[in-house]
Image (cartoon, rainbow, N blue to C red; front, side):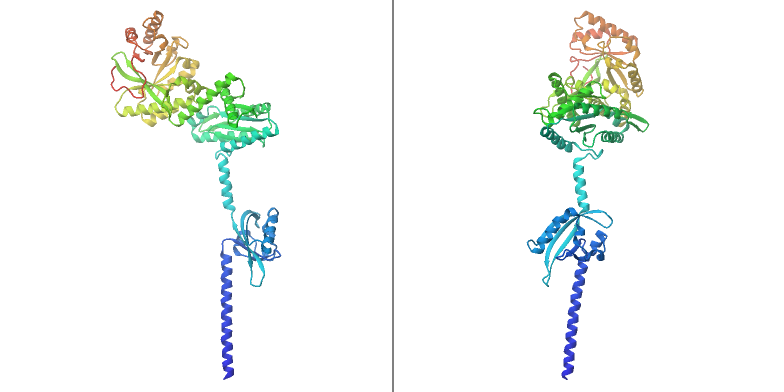
Amino acid sequence: SVLEELDSKVSQRNKAVFKAHQALKEERDFITQLVDSAQMLIITTGPTHHVQLFNHFGEVLTGFSKEEVEGSEVARFFPAGNWLQTDTIFKELFLGNITTAHQEAEFVDKAGQLKQIAWFHSRVEKSDSETIVLSVGVDTTETREAEKRIVWMAEHDPLTDLCNRRKFAEEFEKSIQNAIRYQHTNSLIILDLDRFKDINDTSGHRAGDEALKLVAKTLVRITRFTDLVARLSGDEFAIIMPETDQKGAITLAKKILSELTSIHLNYESIRHTISASIGIISYPLKDATANEIMGYADLAMYKAKSLGKSRYHCYSLDDQSRQQLEQRVVWKQKIEDALENHLFVLFYQPILDMQDNQIRHYEVLIRMRDPISGEITLPGKFIEIAEQVGLIQQIDHYVLHHSIKKLAALQKQGNTCKLAINLSGAVVDTPVLLPYIKRLIKQFDVDPTAIIFEVTETVAVANLHQAKLMMTAIKALGCRFSLDDFGVGFASFNYMRELPIDIIKIDGIFVRHLDHNADDQLFVKALIDVAKGLGKKTVAEYVENAEILEILREYGVDYAQGFYIGRPKESLIEKGSL
């Protein structure tokens, strides 16, 4: 019937409508699910700037619920400092002048935590002609923190948290420009720790690091908040003091010296004290660049070191001392480069056994090789400067390390020669020498009886008690000692008895004219006789011809050394006999 047919059509239409409604609901639910599951903050905002939609991730990120947010003003997501920009963006979007916008803004969540949000705003026109703004926020807090950390690390020393050399150079340049622009005086302090290497050598690098951190904390504590403290390199620090003249810088330098001496680092039963040499310069200086001013401050610091350390020195424009100091800086750099790039080389000069004309031992001599030309520089050019700028101990340790390593290699090849190694006054007077030698002997498994240490007469008697203790302790390891340059320092035969030495080296000044100088002949003969009486061996240096060699043989000298025997070379003599 007609009614049945109509009823059937209505039923089919209802089913179709329900099905369509169900499909729309499923689509809407799916979109809602997509919005809620998206790992970003999603907000829609109407023309009145009230939030219409707030997704689930937004709840998780902010700590606010949908109920708290939806219907509230969108301004809650933007701090006062950012809202003016956001308000302008929203107005432009609603007017249709722009369709998208990007914004970085801070946001404080419900727990009071500050977050960094990257916002992407889009204009969306709904089917009912209503326009909304879709705002998608990405949490960039961790990324921003990582970026800040990277920037911080690029400008700071990770050990001490002080500014590094890169940041210092940037700020120092600004400081000079400000001083020129505003016509005021600034000051720069360069500070270098004294004998810092002793701490590393006796107690290890952890102790050294701890010392550097203590120094850094002390400098930060006693300087003004306007001062900039930086660590330039290993044990070198710098302080920029704005609007401070030389008098003010001296006041701080005195305080630094006083505070550093009160630092006592106790590490594995060893007590270390800390001191520093300080250079001071006030600027700007006429036509002087940042690097030049830094160089002048370095010069002043080296002067403080040469005057005895643990003191300050102000840069002076005295031309003569300036030229000398500048040369010192040049050579200091050369020495540092040589240590770092292994440009020091060891030469070996043969020493003849007069009893059987055999070469059984060599003196180890250091040279510096130019990295470009290959030219060899003799130690007379750099040893004194190394002593003045505090690098002599590193050179001594370099020679010790490579000499004992060489000796170990020779012994493994069956070579029974002995090596005589020079020790400077700087290393003889330090507590690190004995443990360092012990460590090298153990490390390279070398026979210590093949090692002869040479110290000059002047060094040995400068601190006789300390020298005797040091020699006795090292001889207990099996090594021997030779007293070098005997006769030129104090010319006292009494020191032969006082010091636990095995060999006396007669200085070349008494040997080189031995073939025609009667006074030298009397002195050398007497010295050899006294040495024999005390049970000491003798070595004559500067043997440069056959006549001198024969005179020495007649006098009964034990060993001869000089150009007539053999010049210093990088390799040992192949044959044992002369």
